[in-house]
Image: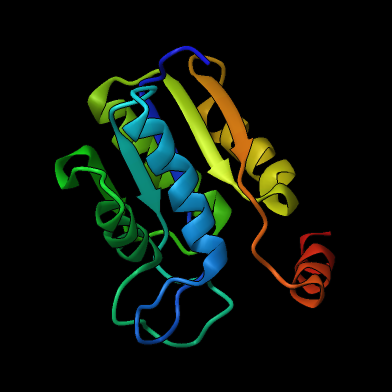
Length: 155
């Protein structure tokens, strides 16, 4: 993989007390490994709390992923937390504003395998052809029952 400008990590849930579930940790870890290996210098973690929840967590998905990445060695100043978006479309819209402000063009989006098709469609439509968008999936950390339920929701 050639060096990229920025990694965008899409949030996956956060508990009401701001704890990051294993699936969110998997996404954050995939990005952290790329930064720590020198393949990229910047990460944008994206997400407030899913529109499926009716609570406001103590910390957003983005802030929880940022804290996790820092705990495993990523420098805090190499991370931007976008804590406004509540769905994949909003992830793309709010991240594009950040990307444009920094004039980044080479972007790797990290999400889960069950989510990558929707993320690919929405990000390519929001960003357009002036960006080099690539997508990477992370290791699944969901139980088979959770994965089946989420896969049904994705359809």
